[in-house]
Image (cartoon, rainbow, N blue to C red; front, side):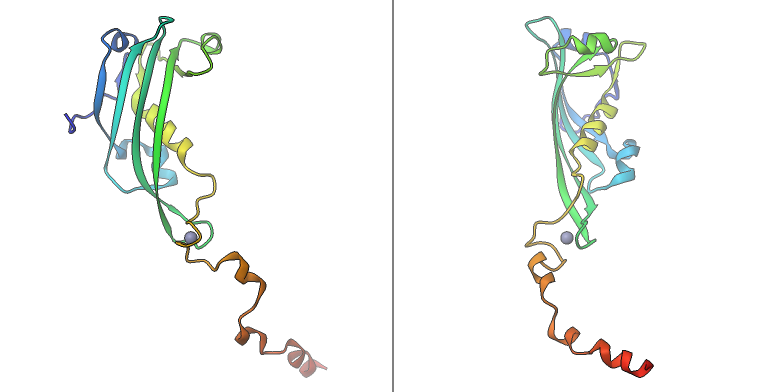
Amino acid sequence: MQNLKLPIMINPRKSAQRRLVCDGFFEVSGMTRLLDVCTPCNEHMQVNVKFDVDDLGLNVISGSGVLSVALICQRCTESLIIDLDIEFTLSPAKNDEAAEALPSYYDAIELDENGEVNLLELVEEELLLAIPLIAKHEPSQCQAPVDSVWGELPEELEKPNPFDVLQKFK
Ligand SMILES: [Zn+2]
């Protein structure tokens, strides 16, 4: 079951009535917006998605997954590997009004004209949200000098006296 490829388009209402549980993978090459901002470490992303109907009769899509990606550290500009750990609980809404009416513990997901949602885009969106705004290594892992070092110049850099240069122009 681990090697099952997940469907990209899925009908959440029908799936919720069947209490469908999907455990499978997405091909990361299909996530073009994600590929624009980072380099995934794997070709496949394992995702678990569950469809259910809650006590209020709402259809619920919940799921989780992890994808390791390489980003550029903003301090030392070296590569930085992080795990994008996603977890989501959504309920489909036909329009903005329906989305507003959802209980606050659900995020709304828009249905297309066929009553389906794009599961791949949904997962991609969650991954994009999980990317840190400023990616950087832990201080102990980072190649950049530690902040406190910036205050003192190494001895060799202090030696040339800029006034010596100015003297020559006089
Ligand atoms: Zn770094």
